[in-house]
Image (cartoon, rainbow over all chains, first blue to last red; front, side):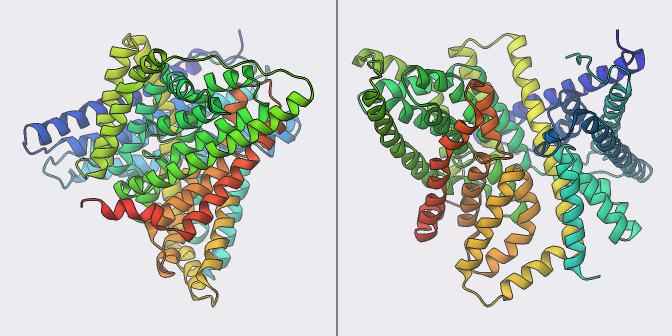
Length: 172
Length: 441
């Protein structure tokens, strides 16, 4: 049992997984909403009001809630042509450094997103469409998704710092 | 400070972070934030989250995950191997018929997916072992798949064209339609290289005393049965494309309905209906989408930083005012794109470079729709050239026993064919512009 499998880190991985499920369901929901919209508009010739806006929010959810899951699954592509040529130990140190910078970026974006959310909450902002959705719902997606991505990075960094040098397999 | 100096510094920071091994999405985000801290007022940093949000807050972008979903469903079924089997049964008498069949199958699968690696994986998984079994040299077998796979972003739907349309405010529907004829042109060019290379290899094999296994003959019944098998998906493809052509549906609507119809076909004809199957498809869609969409969100941020610092405008103005023939500039742009394509995935290149290129292109009197096709051809070449050729890695994953240098050598003729395609399109721009101009609406 490696040191990084403490309950806290298990919780982080679990949150990323749940976030991934939410993102995947958003894509499925967006698909069904689009089908419904097309049927309503072209078959029943009725006006559609909410579908486009909700589908776009689902797209935003799929993007930002998917991000921590994508990080956990190593899905975010990078350019490795230079780093594969440097010695393993130096590469690990570089990975810790770049992961820390990326983690700080995620937390900062989460913080800015949190401020944006707070302004929308204080001001009672609503979308300018017919639907007039309170913007606190879509605006919550960036802070939540980026905070979880930052946490997932924290887990990754701690795992790399742990004595077994991050060789422990990741849970799916 | 001079915008060009600022731009140089920002590009330098971006290069360092991109090559540091940080995921591309975060490297672009970190660079944007660094540029904001260095060169911009603090109030502009406060719109960081808003700008990132706006990068994704677009109905047109929705087409990307939905087309990825559509491609993933198709990839999980046996439709890829059914497609090339169908072409093979019709073409087995033609020399190199199996290879041609694989390229034709890629071009049809390209109409089910908007991504090139997905296309290469779907056809190559069955196609490469089969071609090797029938005596195809390694390089030709892998070259056919890496190159055929690049058709994924040329033949609609295309993730690349969606992003180009967003970045330049060009009609995505028209861009899609513009890709059809060039897509067919590249299919024919790729396919016509196959018999040539195949026969040359067989001659040297016969000289060395090696026997190629005889081709199995197929009767009409066998040909028709496989054709009927692929018919439902071909009908979906035709429906999606014609709904775009007639302006009946927006690309996002076509993507949603297309994904739904492909799912229905997969459930009915390929027996993919368990919750476990659907979950696997969705989670893979989620990974692929979030990877692309995060790059889009941060590239959008990066592009807006370059615009805010007047880097894009200054550069564009200098180039437009250069006293040289516009085709010289076009050639230079192509070199730049080819080089960029070797390092960055298509989506990131387009979002970073199009805010700079678009004013140049229109300023020089080029058609943005035509240029969308040219840029795609360039990026296709980038997908099959090292160091960051996604399709090369896909093929390596499928056939790890083939050394990378053979894969690379095998893709060289196809890169040259792509360059030939760019030249042909420059001489006859109508290949790209004729169909979209005939579109309704």
